[in-house]
Image (cartoon, rainbow over all chains, first blue to last red; front, side):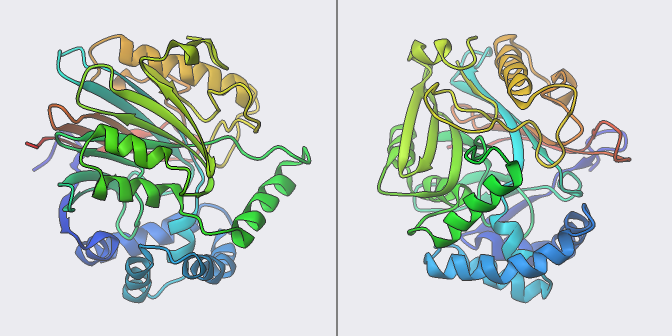
Length: 263
Length: 104
């Protein structure tokens, strides 16, 4: 069924508990085409992926990543460079807000995602996951293991924004390389999209999700900004995460309005 | 209401705000870009009716925009639009969409 003139329906795919592997198995051609297009975005990206792929795989192995088996299955299924690299790459910009829904029930999350890699719009899907905490719907791409925008009916919705980049030497490239180097050498950490997936799989409600995102026992690999929206009016927050550090800005807390970007 | 672009809300956290994913816009600084996006993404949520990408002004909508989504866990509604651009210098257009409503 066509959703409008020239506009397709986003595929809705039941992945059960199979995650990225099941999603890739359902859309292998789209997964391969996405990687091909994405790595064609810049002249050296394909070469960079060949170098970064084994580094990314080794990093996921060393940190005991909970979704490594899925990413391995995707890599085996597609047999092409870029699967590990694109599963840990973290280069998107976004704008997100959460406010009382004007239709009168709950909180509405609005999320706009920017990503410079080609094909990210064309190959998007919605995956329906099953988990111990309940089902959730994940706007994602075939072969990608993380969660960056999702909604769990009756529980919460959430999204990730990329946090500011490092600013130490003043030279962007040097700072970015140093951040990646520290990430490769650092203590056990989770990519932020993997932490958010774990939250959707484990948290029974908004309060449990907030507690997991605020848990300073879990280090995020690079800084991230989480927006969480619950089912009750006023239940929304932004969580700033950097390593094991966390900052919380609740919708009910007016202090953030006087922060860096007064509204 | 909470809103966030690609900058810290906490004034004491350090970092270089990000404007776009890969290519940066030379006409404004990343900090200015973040301030505008923060204000706008809050405003479109505050404004009431929101029908998707057509209601998103620049710079929240920009050459790199790949997805616009709206979610409400209380009603189980999830509306997603995927965007793509026909040329590198063009603004992206909606190429696929789905709106669903699921019971808890």
